[in-house]
Image (tube, rainbow, N blue to C red; front, top):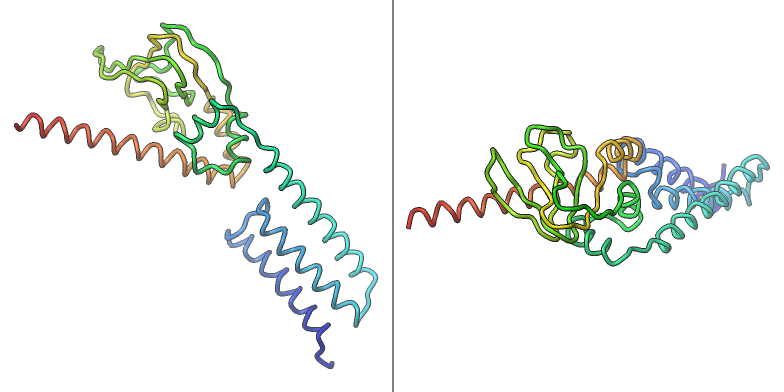
Length: 233
């Protein structure tokens, strides 16, 4: 068989098909990734070009439909990203705690929870009991009590439950609203369900929660170190 530019195009198409599928199976790409779709579309284009030399109706139809569906998929992804809008309070929340989430995943994350106003006296967590919600305080205040003693006051911007929400661990303190508060609450059950269903969402949200948990641990360590230093003076 004489090697020609059409043959080269076909071989490149095969290489792209195999690269995309191999990257998917090895975990380098996800099926929902635009790059997976782009690689498949490019592969179909090169195989289609190769048919100029060796025409095959079945292959032609496969490549045409593959390219068409790829274009539709990319258009859908672009539409979802371009139509993602956030309110002012959503933007403040995301920028403070989940800035690493891509806009379309941030929107999915927000849809799992709800915004509400809670009155003073509402208990968010009980020490020793499982945490069932992730809570963000946009306005208002909450008191943190451990073993009957007040240990901290939480104000606007506080995030409650990021250390325990993933594992359903027990709360280390009571948290009670002391001043009418505007909060965002996200049920653990809904979050876990979505994490199990969408791998890309799981990676992004898990990473963001780990960043938040580590940040809270670092702050606590610095405060503890400061207290020890003051006591030594």
